Length: 535
Image (cartoon, rainbow, N blue to C red; front, top):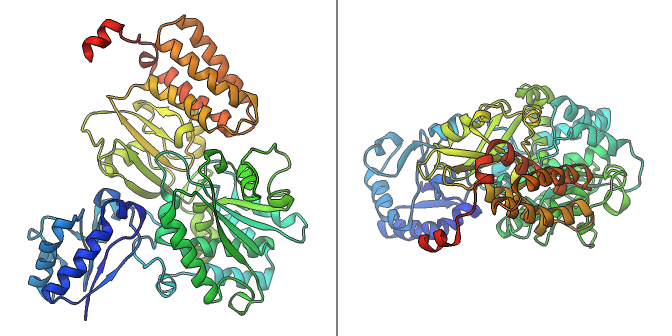
């Protein structure tokens, strides 16, 4: 029997040299007379260990990582030397990269994976592998509900689950679906927002590259729930590996009767295709996304009407994030109450948190709502990569607030974060150590808005430009007090007057710096002589 060796093929692993590692493993195994079956799985999300190489044993998979090209010969020699290595623990102390059983790595073992339960375990393009690990059980339940209670039964399960949008707005998914279901139309659409653009976020990409059939299954179920027979995945162009994997998975799903006409002999019909975006952050906003999907410039639409009533091509449309739709299969397979039992308050289920920035152990952590930033950054993340004390943590992308140490014990809960004038957003967590200049971070927020604004509304288009200028004056000690007051007024105008969250949320990081890190914002720029001396 060949030895099964798993080497990830997702973007992060590839960036760290996974392809080269896989090629050398194949060559070295052949040279050593070791029969191997190399499986290119998705990443488990332990990015600090990539490339993570796993070897199948009788006790389960054992892990080695991070494995570089030069480590492969020694790894293969160890495998050959052990012969029948049914006891994975035999490697302990005999190979420096040995990590034990993969499932027992603390970073992974302490998680509560529902949406990402299959990530890193299966071959992402093997439909048989997907089915063997519970794939399409949710769709089977959805088809049964449709046959007995009509589409309302599916929507009721989603409502029961308490699932809220995982893309940032946190709007109850079941209510959005109910609106689309109740809106009469001959044609309806399901649109997946895969334009993941927030800093420090990669959960959507990881899911699409590690378990694409989950997203496909979720979108088919959404179609059954509201009577839509056409779906689109709006994918950011910066994700070529996800594009490749998704399209291959969609082709397989068509061939096996999970897409197209008469899905699994049910008489139901659903078509799905991938459309690429063009690198505009604003197209992560749902109405701008719809404009782009229609072939227009990505400008934000005024609401109402809501996309659920007049969306793509003016017809009722569900627009959900990747993680929202990928959470649907487990909800249908195990029931809305099962999913609702995770979490706290109005934040039900699990949240995939992405640890990035100045972090020792970056990666994806899926936990029920209620954990704290402190727990995530220091228990899972291991603190800062630099070893310096952490100073600020930004949650929710470039429009999220910078949280000071006294707020790191706030539970990950939509309402708890809102009480601190912060947002959970898409779950991106970016860590900064004490070397950060928070004045520059405040300036960056305004500059980011200036660059990425669609330009449709004045508060966002002009406000961000003025914001950069005002912050520069504050840093340069140019009428500092007057400009601090002006910056406060400008933030109020942008928040209350902008057409969408692009301009409306840009004040969040700026205000958090003004409130929690005022010393950074008001310190004077070194004089010219001092600057020259430093150079």
